[in-house]
Length: 472
Image (cartoon, rainbow, N blue to C red; front, top):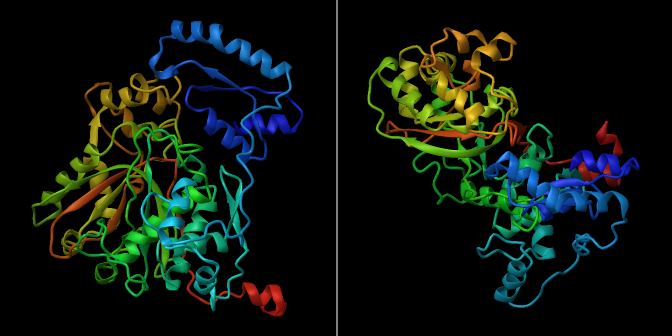
């Protein structure tokens, strides 16, 4: 779609070929990039379940004519721009709470659960005293093409009942969504990965986040409501609804915000997840990535690293499947799964003198699968990577390190990532329980990205109105 829009804007006619069921997403993507009624041709069925001959026959029977028509005729009767959107200060609903909620449901502006009506007074009160320019543009929401503004952040915050003290966290998350590294435009891909937000830093407890028992369960307002804010923001600003950009086959439920257990990190001297990703140590930070699935590693038994590592490594292997396409090919070397260990397990490692780097190295050596299985995931069982090359071929071309071709035995064990630092570790959960949790991430379809949580009063308004000297 993106290449077609560039070509159309340069005056070169195009027709984009899509499978059935993806027309509305394609048109919405075009609108987000500034082109209404992107010319399309539709393939009958889906190529993943068709033989080569079936695909060619259906292409010739149904699609070729659409391509010719799209290249030779004007397209003035397409899907349209989807209607005129309300302006930022416009009243879009009035009446009782039930009536307002019904309007939001009908227009797709809520996830189905009740909301706090975002009245003008409520939104203004949410921002009062923060110093933020309500209409400052944080970035462009891909692929909807809408501006991401402080005002839109506040509207969705009011809807989920957040407090003003949470605004810096939300703005940091909006910065991540605007960052090309994260790739928010992939949030609606068909595997349905969903964002995990991890917060860390000295102010996390003060902001009301739970980092102990039930760390991944609903129940704590900050963890739950901030996560719901993200889902609403993706829906209302970025356009991720099933009518537009969200093409998840099944999808995941909203993941509550994970808060790292700062007392344990400070006591054992381990860096936070955000610091491992390049953020400054000791600074309040948001880290985000999109996750495919997760599983519990329950009742981890052992009093030494040697006893515990095999169990943790097994969990990493069990959570990893088609994501191996991100080690080679689809976002090369971008698979970075997350292991969450309870404070009790982290302290055990530290008691034996192990750093986080030591744990990653140990996991790298033990979280391995047969080479034939790895090659099936990147070849025989997927169409996401080109060719059917073996791991030995990839090592010979310098694409993967030598460890993937230590021998020619198809049952030799190979790592699930290309280097130890690609295994990420966070510390959270009940300090008195020996459990862990593994999440497999979706590579470049929402890559690990960080942003600083800035709790200082903003100078936006002062700079814009009457104190430009404060802006340097």
